[in-house]
Image (cartoon, rainbow, N blue to C red):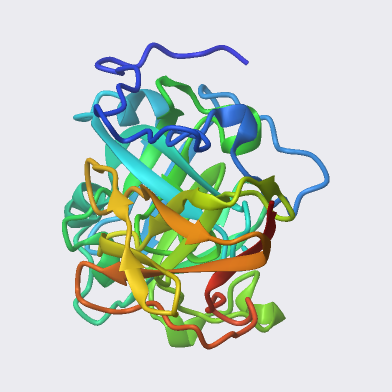
Length: 314
């Protein structure tokens, strides 16, 4: 598939300090970024053949070619994307440097009806999802993304164009190989996953994960290093806590993050005696919300609960 030159595309430059010692990568390489595929094989779409149609409850329908899209002002942002089916402590999540074009600008040019509340997105392979218009139009970097970590999108991640909307689970926002956006109302359609019992609207829930120590690790008793990641896209994280000896929640150190749309790494120490132990974690949002320990399933709109890791100290 022949590439196009995207003017202004920059390489990712992770801000100083976001990567804490002994933890996994703050920036997720494309090869390690999670995938949830519904197609047997990813569609191969040439940029020269790609078009995007914006229609429905608009003043004027827009059909855009790839060359027309990449002549628009480029927007780049760190955004963490995660799957609604990611279990507590799971790995269906990644953080990348996305480059693309503001979806809100195109919707303004189309002239969206004030009665519309949804975007019905459609992929080249027929997959659909519904996205709230209000979220796309509120100033967050909702993108028609063409690059990931400074390189054109890999085919399996939506080449040549996909959508990225911070703060929503992927199944209601992140359409790979996007070719059609209908401005409409939620009551008028059922999308791919909502027809299978998942929620029509699904903002990301506050969450945190322990990456250190690993499950069933054997460590030296005394001060034991703990760490991981926390996220609440487009709200942000202001604190992470783990219980210390006696059960009181202790604040952990947070690494910096360039925006509320990207996850944050955290680290600290807990004092443990020889024996078997379990450590758990909770996050506190920038809005003051404390992550709940009540455990719910991933369906229909994302799981809740505290991640816990068991280990042994000797």
